Image 1 (cartoon, helix red, strand yellow):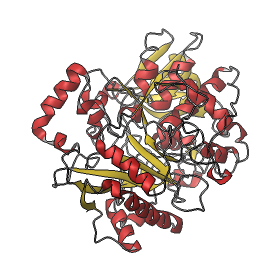
Image 2 (image 1 turned 135 degrees about the horizontal axis):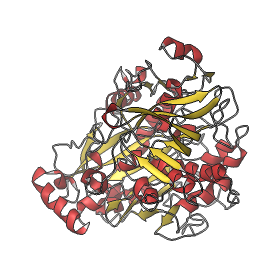
Image 3 (image 1 turned 90 degrees about the horizontal axis):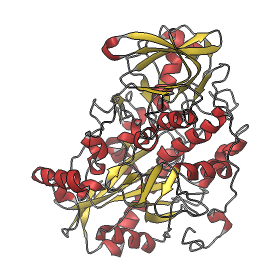
Image 4 (image 1 turned 180 degrees about the vertical axis):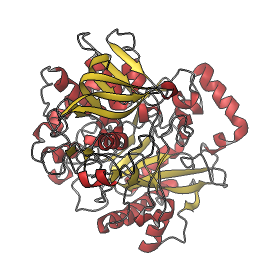
Length: 559
């Protein structure tokens, strides 16, 4: 191997972009960032226009185009699982919703053996470090980080109706779901600024790209981690034109995400030995947790027709696209300048859960991720789904061919708890959308429709209509138990020297919200560990716990 770097980062997505910036910052370490996809060029309108988010998903130019195996709980349906195949990774094609999850998510992590440093107090400084929250800094929010975060404007009258309806149904408002009180309904934060997506590449690589000690290569598929005994020594790369070459490194860091990272470990002989032998890969290190513990959020859209011409549905008409595009291209204004996921909320569907198990995204438009819309003209919808399914899936390679997609099985709707909370979720959504605040607007439920009422009818509809929220995680989890893959302190792969995994796959359990912000926090926190600087001190700030009987209006300003 002719080339040698201190660090090779495999995957130029969310975590990989942050790591490349932080590890190369002082100029003393050489860093190679390898990304299988293309560069996120400034002229990639589908990437940078917030409202164009439906176009990259399902487009092989930007998407790995993963599809699950037939899902037993979904009537044998195969579920598409889009993942970003471009610099910035899934932060280049996601919905730009910026949510940390609930503080109790991290308290749950820290309750596991060996995970004490992953409680909310230890994670909060890194959440604050990475963000520039334009709504203002306080005990819970930062304002000097590379990731610009803007608060949704929620100006459409349908948002006002939604927030009023939530209160009528007995749910509180909150000033900031990333602040003191997550539980409740509010305008959401988004990773966009001045009408343009702020992906991880823009936030972290733009300023770092010219550093002489940082090399960034796109269209470079890593096919194998090279090993000498139990130590990683480098990677094998298939570059442009199919040329294969090896690069050596002091350390290899996998940041390919919850699908690609376990896939590469397995291709490299690290995983369940019996499974690896069955697909023609010689085992190097038996680690049965690799590719296990897959978690995700499933969601549906409860849609209503709107009897007033206030929704955004007319903007879907084909003839309007040139005008929307021109307004965005020349002024970063108009419908194209928003992701439109500007508000929503978090609620508990039952009194058994300690914190919100339901997440709502409200849209003043009725449209699916693939861009299709109902024929009724105007409409609106709420995205809803349980956050804490106890279903667990797998990511497994099916051959030694690195270009062949692994087999994904999410196992949605295969547990009693999952089914119970799905029925509760639809009941809560219908309760809110049926309040008097919506009476001036609602022309009736489009989906699932009035004929879907019983528990089994609801579950059958979810089986037919449910889609992933694109939050795969937990397939190389941190921990010290037999199924853990990486050490909680160092993020090193158990039993292997010189190899770490740092991305959404290391979460032990999924957070109760979108996973982009937690993934970036993990990268920021891990970077300090890698370069050997003193970790940021924990910040023990108060946060809302409903079981403490804190009045919902307490700390209502989030400040």
